[in-house]
Image 1 (cartoon, rainbow, N blue to C red):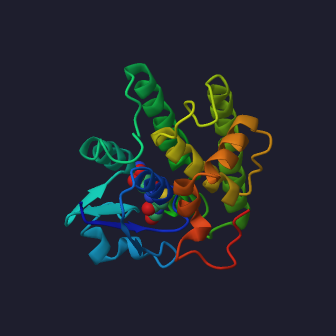
Image 2: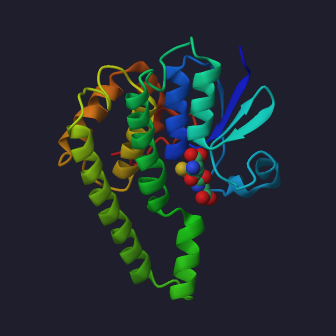
Length: 227
Ligand SMILES: N[C@@H](CCC(=O)N[C@@H](CS)C(=O)NCC(=O)O)C(=O)O
C-alpha cells in the first residue's frame, strides 16, 4: 500500500474532489491542513511541494503529485483492482466521464475567481479597493456559476441517474459534488437545479462523499457558514 499525505484545505473544492476520489478508491491517507486564510499555500515549505502554491498536493511515497484530475486518473490506473473504478471501463462512458469532470475543472472551478486573480483585478481597476467593484465582481461570479450550473444540470438530466453516469459513482461525481459545495458556500440555492440537487442528496448518502464533506474536515471552523 502506498503512503499518502493529502495537503489540502477544508474550503477548497479541488481538495474536496481529491478526498472523495481517494475514499472511493479505498486508499487511506493522512490529511495535512494548509490554511488558505493564512496564505500558507505561499510559504516556502509548501511551494517546494506545489510550485504554483495551490491546494491540494498529494504526496505519494514521498513524491508530490499535483493537479487533481491527473492524480485521480493515475491512482485509478495504479490501483485498478481497488475500490470503485473512477473511470468507466466502456470507452464512450469514459469520454463522457472525463468531459463532465473537465467541465467542472476548467469552466466552473477557476471561474470562482480565487484571491490570486480577484486581487489584481481589483487593484488594477480600483487602486483604493472600491467596495462597490468587489461587490459587483462577486455578483458576476455568482451569476456565471448559476448559468454554468444550469447548463450542467441540463446535460446531466439527459443521462441516467442517480449518479452522474448511472448507478455507480465516478470521477465525474467527485468533481460535480465538490463544485456544488463551493456553489453553496457562495450562497447559491441548488433547488432550481433539480438533477444536481438530487445528485447532491444521493451522493451525501454514500460514505465516501459524506466523510469528505468540507464541514467534516478537522480544519473547518466550527461555526462555518456551510449552507
Ligand atoms: N486545477 C487544480 C486547481 C487547484 C486550485 O485552484 N486550488 C485552489 C483551491 S480550490 C487554491 O489553491 N487556491 C489558493 C490560491 O489560489 O491562492 C487542481 O485540480 O488541483
